[in-house]
Every structure is written in structure tokens, then in C-alpha cells.
Length: 150
Image (tube, rainbow, N blue to C red; front, side, top):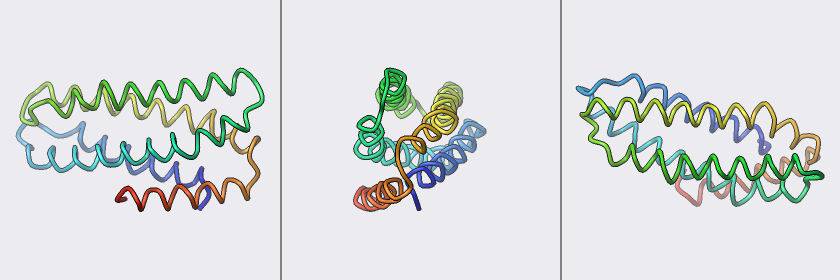
């Protein structure tokens, strides 16, 4: 699978977990705990392969300021999710009403980020990187995911 196909599959899986998590109720403490663990792992692994492999390749191939801006915006969105919203959710009582609101905020942030990547970054990556490069990146990313426990 090429890099873009792999990342899109990750987006679908993560969005499904987040959608399910956002629709839980305070009574569903067990399912919330299980889903939160899955979301955390998915986010950590997905961000690692993007930041370690995909983004640097795209940044190196970039040709203009818009490409650089897209790169830095993606990193900033990762920072917001990983360092601000996710820790807030992880620190919440899964049986609380506020947990559901925080889960929804994370879901919306991740969906926005994934949509931007799929609408803007991935088409640009297809322009800048040939299919063999995208295939090689996908293989490296899949191997890295395995190393990280996916």
C-alpha cells in the first residue's frame, strides 16, 4: 500500500473510534475506557509515522511557500491534538459528562486535520512524489507502525 492509502486507512479507523467514543454516555465507563485506549494508541502511532516519515519527505519535495505552510500547519494541528486536547481527555473521569464534550472536541479536531490532509496535502503529495516514492514511503511507514505496536 502506498503512503497515502495507508494514511487514509488510518484516518478511517481513527475517525470510527472517535465517532463511537463521542456517542457514548457517562454510564458506559468500560467502553469509554477501551475506546480511549484505542484512540490514544492510534493517534500516537499515526502522528509518529507522519512526523518521522511522510511529512519530512513531503517537506523535502516541496517547491514553494504554500508547501512549507501546509507542513507547519499539519505539525501544529498534531501538537494541538497530542499536547492539549488528548491529555485533557485522558485526565477526565470517563464517567463524567465533560468527558463526552472533550471526546467530541478531539473528534472534530482530528476530522478537520484528516480532511485537510486528504483534500490538500495528499493531492499535493501525488504531484510532488512519484508513485514508486509513495510506495516506498508506505512500506517504511507500515514497518514503523509494526515497530510501534500497531
